[in-house]
Length: 348
Image (cartoon, rainbow, N blue to C red):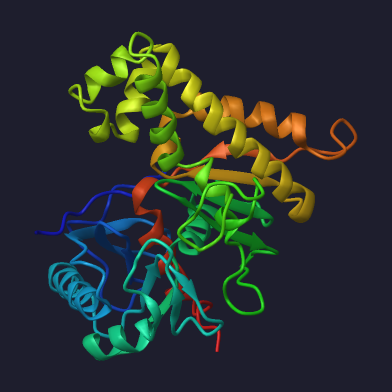
């Protein structure tokens, strides 16, 4: 797969410098975002602009195979964009890392990652040091530096995808907690003895306010009332087992009542969880990203309404803004590159 130069996703981002890329070492860094389905990487300058990117399918969940894929995309980007060997490399990985960012202790949605020395595996494969953090933390940093959180030093970023990822920026720094696994808000319990979660607990927030929850609600609606769920079933080709989150978004945008109701339900739980976070963290802004957020106000409208209704002390305190993320699916590697460049990802 060839790399492609393109501008950053910010509305005011300048055109990528494809004609005369900066010399190696002039503020360029490589960021890599490792997810359950794809490995995405990019060359990013100090202003958050993407000079080139590359993607590969995630080759299963074996860390050594993932390291090989990371080496491939990094090598491709170095060759295509004159990035020197000294350029910093940052990795955003879906998992709970230790305090030093060295080991993935647990990855709820990646079965093979249990106490894996991911940083050392990747460093050995690339022949140079790398820095690793949770992918939601790198996204939060990107939005803080270049996206919807610019200028906001107290920020919570929530990614609503298959599950819920989250990152916390306080006083202009990514916060990891005492053991490195802070800000895993998707696994706070919102329903005692509720639905089982991949983390081993029950009733976690991501079981009620995620893409998985949206699809589950849509399938239940369509199977429980075939007439009401006719549009959803049609988008799934008559097989509800193949229904996807984008299908539900399409139906809701068309005004399908069953699909709209599903977003109201997921938005309710999203707002409920944000109100609980506001009670503890009191951020100035919540930035909402992830695939489900592509629905925009279909999700954020109900979320804001429930956030206001559930906020402790409502009417007597300022309320945090709830806004959409701006950087899209590239935020993870943009943030990883910027953190690596700044040298603030190392936590030893």
